[in-house]
Image 1 (tube, rainbow, N blue to C red):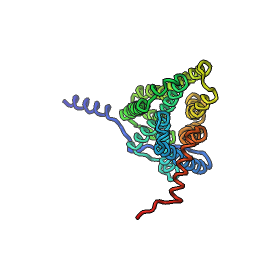
Image 2 (image 1 turned 45 degrees about the vertical axis):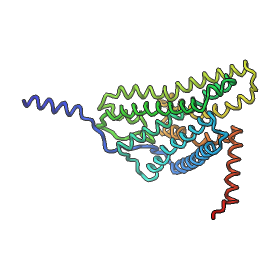
Image 3 (image 1 turned 30 degrees about the vertical axis):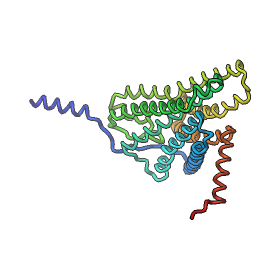
Image 4 (image 1 turned 45 degrees about the horizontal axis):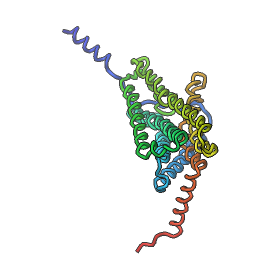
Length: 328
């Protein structure tokens, strides 16, 4: 009887999941004058907040922009705003006020929101690429293929898929035991550095598979689709009677966003073994916060119809301030 009891006790000890109350975000360690980088991040966040909010308000107010393309642009601005808010305020709070300890539940929440918004940023670029592909390759059928309803369906599908795939990644983290270090070598609760902490104590093979799968879903498959779509677009420009300057101008903004988002991230992941840890962390933090800041600037400067709508909106706001409505 005592033997059976000891075996049951041993089994219970083996299957117990060890969840630490806190993790420690190491962040930017040993880098001099980092306070200037935090000031820089604060400025980036303010510009992102103002720029993306402005885009969303202009698109919402101006009914001439209630078209499929600008549904995707509105969703991109919303995602950029959420992604910046999920990272920068918490990052500044941790490292400016020495609050680098984060609870287990808060860490998983941080992981979930950051990866959902990053995944959706990538999916937004696919949606915009699809919009340009149909507009240039099938211009006469564009309004039948790309409708407000179909664009909303694409956007909602992207959100649902992003949430599901990240929920699976977070769920796989919850099955791990963390019996040794609780120091996460990143600037947030990053998936890779987090599950590797459980390597000596748990079977991390499912997490490792997910770590290989996520970059394929978020980075490689989208960039392959975008490259293929632009091959079709370039082919169409030489076979269909379209004004080439005008057609390419409509794609310039999107290609710029693609380059800003994908190239630094892919470069960092492919060469991460050759890059110093602090350099990798800073590079990843910049690739996370710079695109949300640059996207509004690129669309305001490159898209003529949006500039017209923005000027009209600003004139309307200025007139209301100069001639306020009298109330009785």
